[in-house]
Image (cartoon, rainbow, N blue to C red; front, side):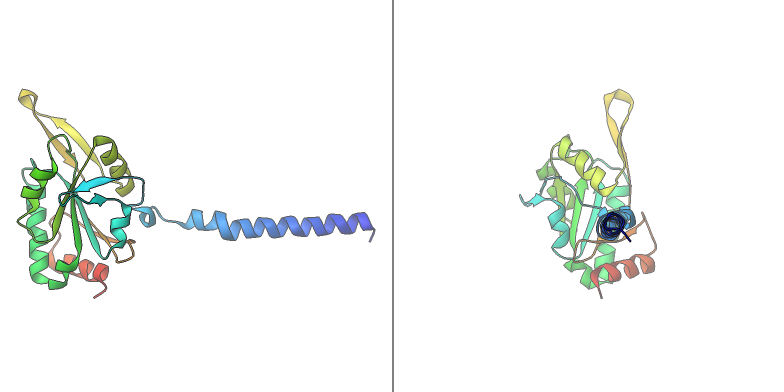
Amino acid sequence: MTTRKLRLFLWGLVAVNVAALAWVGIISPRMNASVLDTLGQGDYALETTSGATFTEANLREGPTAVFFGFTHCPDVCPTTLGDILTWQEELPAAKDMNIYFVTVDPARDTSEILGEYVGWVEGVEGVTGSQEELDKALESFRIYAAKVPLEGGDYTMDHSASVLLFDEDGRYSDRIRYQEDLPSATAKLKAALGV
């Protein structure tokens, strides 16, 4: 084999190894990352009713439940808050979860209003902020929310109605659907809590 052919062969091996390393270390992990693995991750900064900042870092502060809603909601939101109370009564460990109620209507839901709205359920923290930051959070959590005009110039909000569960490391665990039966919801909570 000539020196030129040997060099070409060796450079070819180098190129194949670089391509393999790029595939294993960079390309493949990105292709295999599920959308669910990125739920809640993003560049949003909202405010909690206790005055703290709510970011993706909050999801890594222990098992967490996140629900999007609004205080003028006629049925889904108060029902879900009632369900959360039931889950806490059924599974006392659920009281140790960080629970966030994020408004989809920041124009009307101030921190003070949210605090009063969620205050009857132990451990639930309201979250609000600017529309710009909320839009970032909606995208990060893959939540649908839209303003629906009503007669007389008023409006309501249409929105996703699931409670999203995250484990103690901030990884998405599961979702509890609106009015999901108690045994199923409790099993999902146990998985997120690691109990």
